[in-house]
Image: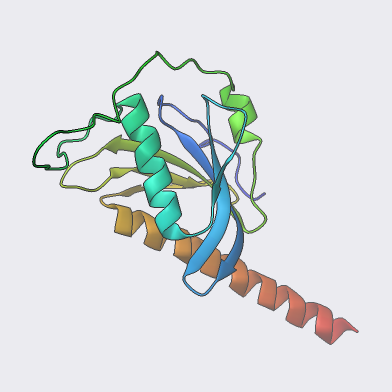
Length: 163
């Protein structure tokens, strides 16, 4: 790990650690962790990540969504909290989770304009960037994974040349 870990913190009730283990083209697989469960939330695709994290934010009701789904007729308020969630995993435990290809601390601060705004930290490089939308956050993750693949190729070339 290159960074000094200055930017490794959760800092919000809805902070998650995203661990990427596999990548095929523009899709990736992995898991994410949050402080309210010891179990990982498995992810099979980018869409799975977005829907699972959105469901987590809705369960917490944080950050509060500025838009809501419109329905006609009866509504099923599936996002209403039945009980208060209690943190069972410490920030240190969360920050100890890592993916094979990359690890990211995601702190969504707002859910406005039907998207997310917040900060993402690439743990391996100790770099934090603000994002203005889910799409921008996904592009930042893809960019980090691209950098990992380039470094892996350079290492393979160097190993190949030394044999």
